[in-house]
Every structure is written in structure tokens, then in C-alpha cells.
Length: 291
Image 1 (cartoon, rainbow, N blue to C red):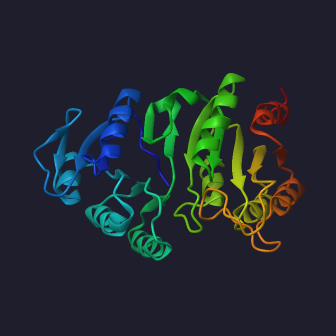
Image 2 (image 1 turned 135 degrees about the vertical axis):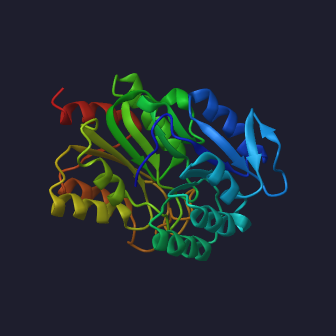
């Protein structure tokens, strides 16, 4: 996974839609270089001064961009994602929710053949405050430049924890939402490996939730790889009833599988400090950094 630098061009798919138009404006205001948008049949228009093209191939050729933020409705996400990857996009941020799992799996197969990275679906995107690059729907005001990497399965909890960190003087080197679906393109383990050797990242905060085993696998990876930086976690859904979905499609407990207790226990066994509330995260990070 490679994130774009401040000056690198970024595309927006379905830029003429309500959400594409709104978040293009907000990303531009944050400082992101939105170079072009794509909307079939609506080429030659402009949105917030950004040119619109009919196809991804045309937009990639005109701008040289290798990154796209996708706001296409769920039923068209697979086709739009394939078009982006086949046009040369190597980082695709899929904001769309309710994408069928089978479509996500097909898109991941296409991306894998081309060496492209998919973030999401059903995610808030990624933000690098020091570079003023915001690719998604997160509120830029919650984030500050700093040395804490923040990875989350939940969008709103990512904003909440970022705000708590920022208020405590702990800015973020990167914040990325992997998405809340049962199958996502980028995993927590890949996020951790991405910042493992990044000098600008001194500590990592992981926001997990009930359902699945992403946090348990992450804990095993931390132990097995000897991850060299302090990690702090918060797990949402400790009081959720079994077999009742909590917000995200992937946040559901079946029997004893995917419980908060299982995740907290595994992370603590791996040496991860686990906060009982978002407000507790900054103090655990400061303690882990020796502050």
C-alpha cells in the first residue's frame, strides 16, 4: 500500500452524485489535490472547478493519477472498481456501503491480479494530516499532524478517538478506516506492517469491534512478528447482545465467536494496552511512549 503525497493527483468516481460532489468540496478545502472526476455521460462538466470525464481511462490518461475515491452506489461498485483498476489505478478507496460480499471478493480478485490496493468497502477512507491529503468522508477538524498511526473498523469511532488524541496533544501520522464489512480489501495486519518501519510513526492505535477475528489475528501477528512499536487498542461492542448486528455488517457475535472478551484477551496477551473507553486511549498511548 502506498499513500499519495500532497501534490499527487486523486480522482473521484461519481463526482456528480450528492456525496461525491459534497466530499470533493471538503477534500479540496482540506488541501487534497483532486485532479478530476468521473461520471459516465457527464463528461465536459466541472464540479467545484474539477473537470469531469466519462471514463476512468480518460481521467487516468489526462491526469496521470493512480488513486481514486469511489462514491458509486453499491450495485455499480464492482463494475466501477474494475474499470478503475483496469485503467491503471493502484489505490482504490471504496466508501460505498452495502456492497454485496460476492462483489467485494470479485473486486479483490481483479485488484490482486493488477497489484492494486483496495481500502474498504464501507469505510471512511484515509487521511495523512502532515501532507494535507484527505481521501474520504472523515471530518478534517478531528485530525492533527503527529506520530500516532490510527487504524479503525469504525468510521465514527475513528473520528472520536482521533479527536481524543488530538486534544491530548497526540497528532496522527496517518488514520485509515478499513471498513466494517465481513470482507475488506485491506486488513489490520497490512496496516500495521505499513507503518512498521515508518520513522514518523512512534505508536499505533487500533479501534476494533465485535465480530470476526481480525483483532485476534492481529494479536497473533504482533506476537509472532515482534512488532517494534507500542500498540494501544479499543474494542467497541462489549455490551452488545449475541447474534444481534451492531451497526456494521461484520459486527455480530455468533455463539462465542468474535466476542469483545476474546479480542481483548488476545490483544492483552500480545502486550497491547486495551482501553475501556475512547477517552482512555490517550493516557495509554502516553504511558506506552514513556510520557
